[in-house]
Length: 125
Image (cartoon, rainbow, N blue to C red; front, side, top):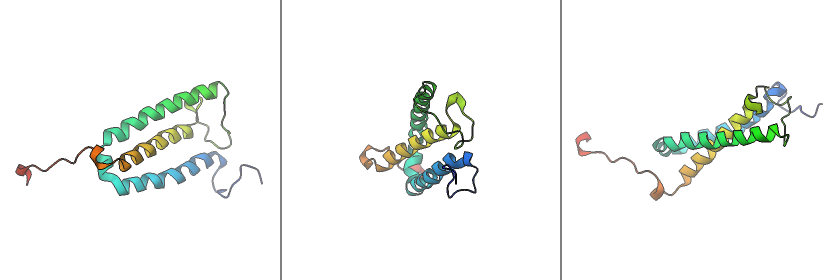
């Protein structure tokens, strides 16, 4: 058995990183939306913009690190598409990790610091 073979042998080795990452992250993301969809929708600008900014920053730092030889990625464990020298899976990792952190922060933020619900007007009642 090769060192990169796992119990997930039904997958091509190139899909291992992506599979493990999504198998861990997607249930957590779904749970956050099931539990706190109203809060997350009310703060949609933060939910979209902050992970985009943080994820992009982390990808840029990863590009520098890979270019300088600080680390590398096992070609057998990734799909092989690497924009800017960083594997596509790593891009997904940075954006989804940032999204998980931002959503968790919003969901655990005390109510007094959250954007208030819009009150119904008398005309709409």
